[in-house]
Amino acid sequence: MSEYSQQKIQKIYINNLKNLKEVEIDFRGSPLTALIGINGSGKSTILHALACCYKPVDDTKTINYKFSQFFTPTVDSHWKGSQLTLYHDYRIGVDKHEGESTIYSKNLDRWSPKYDRRIPRNVYYIGIDSAVPKIEQEKKQSFIKYSTKLLSDDISKIIKEKASFIMNRDYSSYHLHSATKGDYIGVEFNKTKYSSLSMSAGEQRIFTILSEVFNAPKYSLILIDEIDLLLHVYALKRLISVIHTRAEEKNLQIIFSTHSLDILNMNKEVNIRHLYNTPEKTMCLIDTKPDTIFRITGEMEKPIQIFVEDTLAVAIISSITEKLNLSRYTEITRFGAARNSFTTAAGLLLSNRLKKDFLFVLDGDEYKSKESKVESIKKSLTGTTSENQDMRNLLLDCFLQFNLPEDNQPEFFIHSLLKELPASNQVIQIAHDIHKEDNSHKYIDEIIDRLGYSNKEVGLTRVIDAVQANERWEFYISPIKQWLVNNGEKYKETL
Image 1: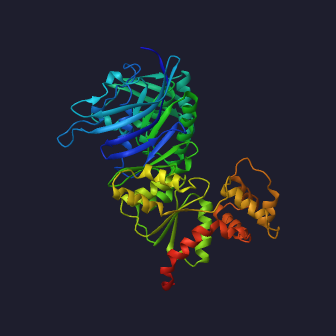
Image 2: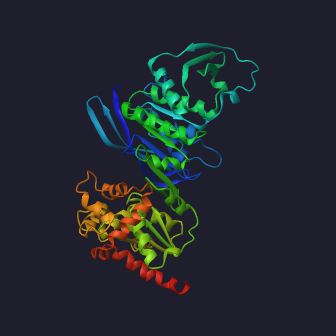
Image 3: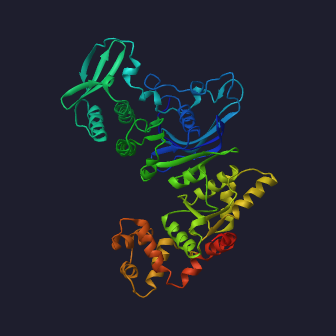
């Protein structure tokens, strides 16, 4: 067999698999991808499917995962009609294959393609069973005798050091205990030696994950179900930092599921993929925000629902609604990346929850034309019937953007408006002093930092209050302000 290398998954499209329907999950960006979503949203199903998409490089060293192992036929389901497409890269010798597509399906009694035709790759799957304490697995033994070996090779030393960092414990040694019925790891901490039989489940699992990550060859795929299981958020953050660094060093691809919303604060190291099921299809939001999750899964109490990209847009909309006396009737939700807006809107519509006064506000630097919005809506809401088209038209009416000049970004534009004003207060004075930033998003952050505000929302309020003195501000916010005037009129009588 020719030597394969540089294996990498770009994305997976699932037509139908268990409770997943017509969903695309993109893994490009960080080498770490987190799958989040409520119970039953399909996180584990994706990990199980990915484990089966490759054959082992050496089946004496890694498990040959097969669809029948995770999707075992039962009297209730034979898995017929299941289908997914893997888009992936790999190299054979000097020949590069990029964006190759492989379809996996079960039409009759067998899955295709045949297992020996799969691309080889080292795949490691860490299931939730690894969180079961070793002592729970050995309950029937009254006495366990083992021999001990010090693990002093380079990789073991690294694992010990990284576990010490994650657990905030200075392990003095790392061992392998060999018993009649199997092996156990062991450590020494604070002059006390103990094996995994005495470890907490979280501590045990950290060593399991680190062992797989640091022993895995280059270009391996590592799949971890419920990475946060039994871990304190402090340990989780450190674990993510450690495995992210290792993944970059060895070109590993690590994909994991989690229920921890703290992972959303780690989006610089992790791709966030939020799964949300509707009766028609499964939606996948990219780098979503906590309030988006709560909004599309919980009750929406206020009649006016406005979805925006970031905290700057929240501050702008809040200022508008306050002046129109509509704050008490308006809920503002961040959806993160602009492309999430179309997925979120489609998910709400398919869930029959897009009933009130909904508005999705785009910053104006992306998807500015009607055509670009239509194309993005089509990707989130497929179908060729007249009803499908009516639904897409309904969604299109829910989108507006600020009047942002061409080739501008909101932060840079607002900064330029401030500089047009006489330096009559501290905000404007600071804006005049800022001439060039290496990132357009930093223009407003720099003003807030120089003002000395640790609370960004308070700083943004001061910036928005100051910039409104520029007469061009009204034109910038006019599409959203007019929508609020028109749709808020019905609530005036209750004020």
